[in-house]
Length: 176
Image (cartoon, rainbow, N blue to C red):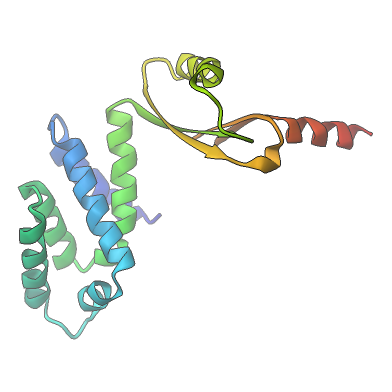
């Protein structure tokens, strides 16, 4: 992620500081970044240097009108467009999302198991995660990965806590 994208996300975040619409603006920027990333026609028009920025602004306005985005999001998107930085919108959105999550004390956690577990079986894992992430609102994502054989793998940011049978077998294999 570029330093420029981080600066833009910081500027947007500063405008959001204390604003109850943090999640709304974050969601809207993410939606627009996803649209930019996936819609080749929109991307070609926005990035085309031959098309005047005013024309691009009109296209963006008509799109924003149909989407009914908040005023703050609209201003941010127009500023990004006028500065010719729409190409880094996905990075700006990702950086802003991290800032909003931190400010709202929100943490995403991936729990990986070999098969679907019951709520009762997952409860001790969640309790331990919540104890470690004291005071943060934890949002769980559950994945199935049969290659771990059994046990559980917990991913929090870049940290991986691997309590899988596969990992235990690999350790035994290394020591032999």
